[in-house]
Length: 304
Image (cartoon, rainbow, N blue to C red; front, side, top):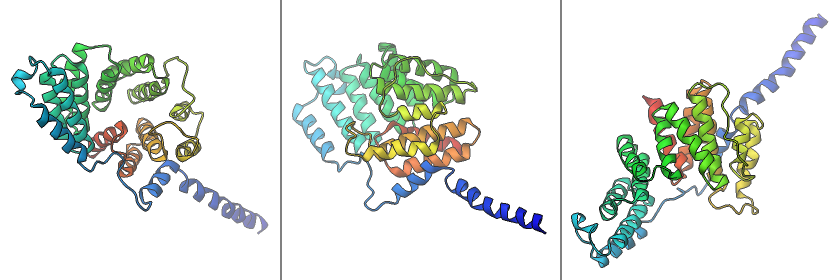
């Protein structure tokens, strides 16, 4: 009788521990759900449309020539700049079709500007026009094949289209070539995930001195040096007064963490968990982050 009682007692003592593990199994997901429901939640990067109106007014005042004549006009560079400003304003306002149209018109004024084509590709990617993205970014790279930003867009496209060999090669280039060590960290993360999603069981990072700032905790997580629960601290530290890095508040860090951790779940054979992470990311409404657009594309793929 004492043996049975002891066994029951051991079982009862174990139950709360198991329940606690289940509750905290996805701490980033729980944090995202809490923040998405917070009072006064607004879209990060949303626009009231005033910038669009100002950009249109500037174009009207400049009397830009017809598209076919713009490249040969004396003010071609200035006209292209005005169209780029209109495109960026439309993108911030959420009108991606109008942004793409403005970038195309900027391109007619400066047909050999690789940056305009790369910006067009970025907008088309956010609009989930993957064919248009491929055309625009290929044209950009034909002009400037060493552009880190253009290679990053091309690599992201390769990633979502599951062209793993191309994605690995491009992200390796981005991770090793970006002069900004902190920005290179994002290339490192995608390089690691492209290898993992591509079936490489032991991925690696490019050897270079890392930044000590965000997103370094995410790289440590990928290497198994942080648990997901331990990531919550660096994520919430984004709202501390001593964080002076722009666009790295808690919501922004959480947006990024949800994407990269979600992709790791997918690589480890849990696409349904990845979908939950991507959905939580979208609900944070950090619209201007690349990870937001990537998550939307991945959600569309998972639905199919």
